[in-house]
Length: 466
Image 1: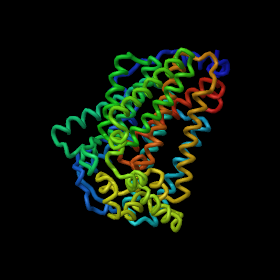
Image 2: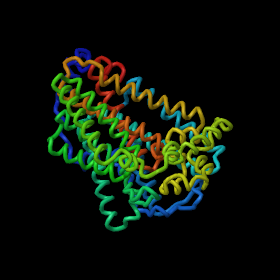
Image 3: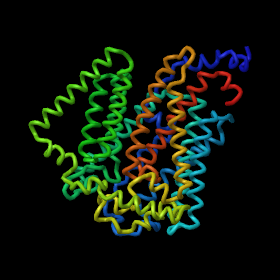
Image 4: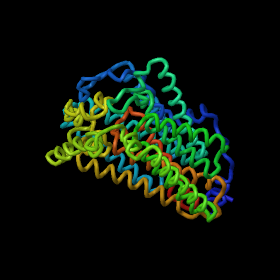
């Protein structure tokens, strides 16, 4: 039988989906899919005060900046080489649509160089944006030709975050000021500094581990240990946004799990009831005022309502965007606009990099309303594609396809975490930041799994449309 006939009859697709995939070692995996190396950042062992008081809308270089840029360039050049030697085919239309929105957003940022107050900064970060997009596309092409073990993809991402956590703990003994800071009325915060974003790493470790525990994707003991580590890391960062978003993701995961059967539903309801009763008992013993004061880190109600001064910045960004609908220049614009106006209201670790402390407002300030609309469409299309792929029925699903769906649903939870916490942090849209690459990797995983599931459900599509 010819290869075309095999595709038409679906036999080739079935053989591909049933053939077991050998799990690679972590080193082999990272060399095979180097886009995951970007999740390391790489870690920057730089003091927080390095750029304190410096106009970050203009170019400034140090040893670590060169390493960061060189790290991305090396991975991107390898991606370009592999794209040039890859077999030619067409990715599914929904995936291409997502990539087109991402590319168009990059073009809008590039155009903003013309009116940016720091043209060098805007040009540099625009180049870094496109280099990251190239790495994502190369991963999708490779995953389309040689699908990885998608569960291993999720576990490798967790392993990377655990390694970053280990680096933070090491720095805690060598140079504590590098990974922690003292905030007035809050106390010590172990945020990870430029070494690692513990405010994102901790919750993601917990989400992956909880998902793995519920669906028995690995040894339960490992899932429990990693989950406890993730929760502990989230608590020591003292980031309310990360804590609330983690709770939201776990609640969604619990509700999703409850739908799998009545027995599970009873267990979830009983567990939720016990948690509520314990919370009420703790409030009665400790006192609601003391609990509330602990949760809000001792802040005044006015500070809480303004989200530690963030709403003032957002209001100013909106006013500026109404008079400058085209934006103020990618990254450099909002940094110049912010200047030193809000240093007394925002956390100390934001003073050196500027920004609106909100990824969506950073996109708005950088490329204007067109950029914000394009970014929201990019995110919406990714989420819709992922949800449809996770819910789409498959004909005789193989164990590999079942595992791929588990990985896809876990990746969607991770993306939800990124999208919600992006409302209180600008790093999700700023290249050379860990969470920028982590979010792009999660999106790449969603697109990659959706592509494979789409082809598995439509073998004819694999032949005629790539």
